[in-house]
Image 1 (cartoon, rainbow, N blue to C red):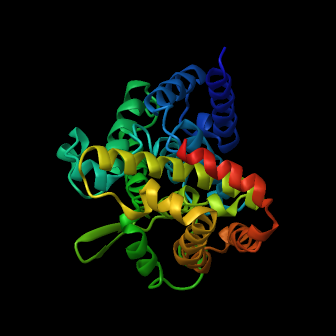
Image 2: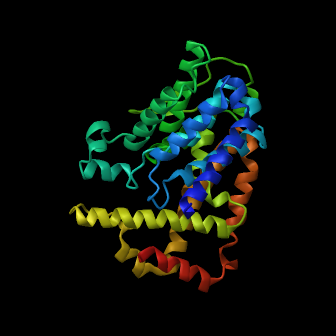
Image 3: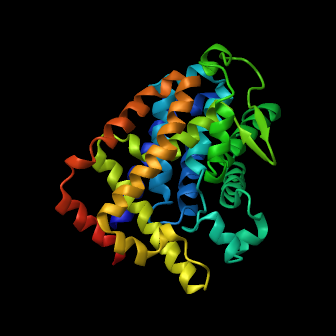
Amino acid sequence: MDIWDWEREKLLALSVDLAYRVGLHRTLNLPLVNFCNYVDALADRYIASNMYHNFTHATDVLLVVCHLLLECGASARMTEWEVVACFLAAHAHDVGHPGTNNSYQVAAKTPLGEKYGAQATLEAYSADLGQELLEQHQILSNISLPDRSTVISIFRSSILGTDMAQHRATSTALKHLPNDYYTQNYPTKRPGRTQLVTNGDSTHALSLPALLLHAADISGPSRQTVSIWLTRSLAVTREFVYQGDCERANHIPVTEAFDRLILQSEGLDGFKRRENEFTRGLVLPYFRDVERVWSGIKPLRLAIEENLRGWETLDRKFVSKMWGTIFV
C-alpha cells in the first residue's frame, strides 16, 4: 500500500465516522455498504494529483462542517434534510475539480467551460457529478420523493454557493438580514427554508447549509494554529502556480496572483502579504457577517483573529524552505 492508498483509507474511515456522528444512516435509512461504496466512488472522482482541490480538501471541509453542525449547534437550527444535504454537499463540493479555476475553463475553452459557461462553471459540474453519484449508489432511495427533492435542492444550492465569484454579493445580502436571524427566525422544523435572494443578475443561496459550507470552504485561517493554516495556504499557492503555468503554455494572459515569476520575485514577504490581505479582506469579514446572524460560528472567527496575530511566531527559515518547494 503506497502513501496515497494509506491516506485514502484514513479519509474514508473518517468520512464514515462523521456520517454516523451526524446520524446520516438513521435519517436516510441508509445501509453502511451503500455509503461506503458511495464514498469510495466519490474519492475516485476527485483528482488525486491536484495540489489542493482533492479528496483531502473535501474531507477537511466536511470535518469543519460537522464541527459546525455538532459542536457549534448548527444542526439544532436546521431540519434533518438540511443537515443531510449540508453533509453531502460538503463532501462533494469540489468533486471532479481539474485543478484550474472557472476563469481558466472559459478562457481555455475546455469541455467544462464550453458546457457550463462562465457562471459557477466548476460548482455546477460538481453539483451534477455529485448528484449523479448519489443516484448511482442509492443514497437517497429510502426516503420519500418529496424529501429526496428537498435534499437535492439544498445539496445543489449549497455547492453553487461556494463559487467565490458570488462571495461579495452573498456578504452584501447577509447585511440585510436582522441580527441573530438564524436563531430567532430560523427555528427547527420550519419548512421551506432554502431562501434565494436575487441581487442584479445573480442568485445567492442564503440557507444556513449554504452559508456554512462556504464558510468551511474558506476556513483555512481558522485552524488550530497558524502553522496548520500555512500548510493549506502553500497547497493553494502550488495549485495557483500550476494554473499560471497552464495559462502561459496555452497563450492565455497569466493571472497575476498565479504567475510564478511574480510570486518568486515577491518572495516570502509577498506570500505573507497576500494571505493576510485575502484573510482580512474576504474571509474574516464573511465570518463576522455570518456571526451577526448566527452566533455559533464565533469560535472560528476568534481563531482567525488569533492566527492573524500569529504569523510573526513562525520559524522563518522553516517557512522559507516550504515556500521554495512551490516552484520546484
